[in-house]
Length: 92
Image (tube, rainbow, N blue to C red):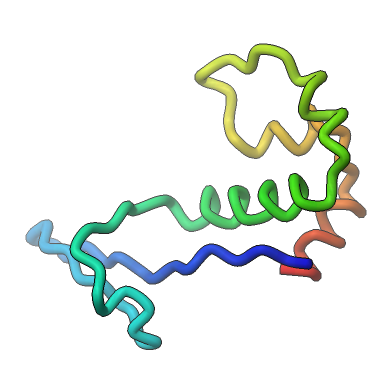
């Protein structure tokens, strides 16, 4: 089962004005939004899918993670191979 996070595009113009691009109107009734870089959003979605299919043993073994470590490094720390990540992307 793949988990999906609803998302839209937030576009910033030269003057700093922000426009929400939401063609499916997923956020039509929302008052506040959080902007996340697109590659981080994909990483978060993949990690959620990994959590849902994981027995949590690997998560317990992570220990303390430095704050400056990129989110993507969690895949390596959790023992995911390139093939595992490819499989997660296909389920995505």
